[in-house]
Length: 334
View 1 (tube, helix red, strand yellow):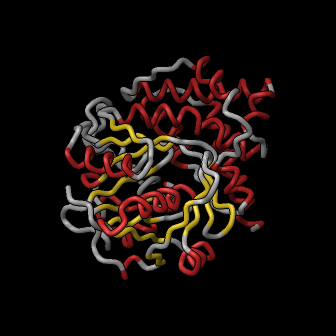
View 2 (cartoon, rainbow, N blue to C red):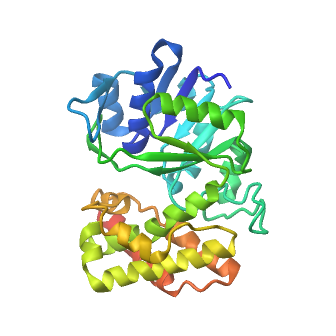
């Protein structure tokens, strides 16, 4: 796979960090562009993109092509999306405008992605689509699940000022084909991102990684939004930490019903969570910023897949109802 043109579509905190590291790496060997919007876009255009890494004394500053109109960019060899699940369907046409026959699309998503059941051999639901994730199958039709390389990110990132991004940890990324193949494209993209200083692992079991991360996201994101508490405070409260454990148990039950395999017990996951630190989840960041919350991929689909598999999710259903109303009120107030 020849990668000479790269576009990061959605260059917010995580997408912007990847764009900066790739632009710093490829030099004249390839071109890196970003699709962004608002004050963040204007700052990137005028001053460039500044990345403050957790272990670096000075920021990484890069200049690259930035636009809010993907139609002004040529077709790309590689597109990396930094959008959240609920932001993807409205961007389907824009992403599609960047595609040529050979383009691959790395989709960095939390929760259950729209392509989840494409070439899935374990669940018994191969090619099943959910309108909640992909209304009118826009992503499925315009982008196509066959182009996708799944990506699970373990990277804390935040836009601290327009054009400025801060990483809170070293982070890592797991890439995988929906088919489970260890394809040449997968290896080429993994090698490129590794050469840019990103910690990359490729896997034949990307769905297991999706469920492993969802165990934390489905619990901590909505609970943090409902309580406005960081992770250390949630885990320090016996009632809240017990609720986290109950949601994690429901995630595990639904995931296993669909063929997922978990390497950590709930007790091990809870113990790990006690040492993560005073992390402000992405949903809490969005709540404070008055943005729409990423509910459906994280907790809504857990409930929907629980119904599909007859795995009970009573605690998650309660959390879903509460955080959905919180989102409505928060956006009305904004």
